[in-house]
Image (cartoon, rainbow, N blue to C red; front, side):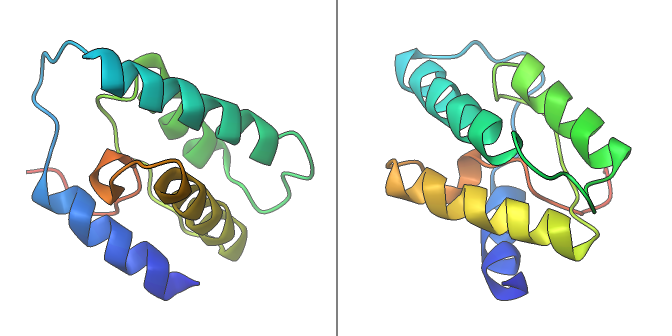
Length: 106
């Protein structure tokens, strides 16, 4: 599962979001679809998911899915990130849409 995250995170690093971006219609739709998937995936057992992971992800959603970085650390966080990545791609979203990255800020 870590291999999928590594591939997706490389795509995220290649296209950082600008500081003040307004969502277009497609980005708003992607964020809506992704938010539904997030709610479904986090409705159950959250053991192994850290407060920091949840806080960082909440900031991503609050930005309209335009800004933020979420770094999975635990196995449970990697599984959640991998599953969300698969769902996002199945919904027609590019990997660069996802917030999962552990790169240091520049």
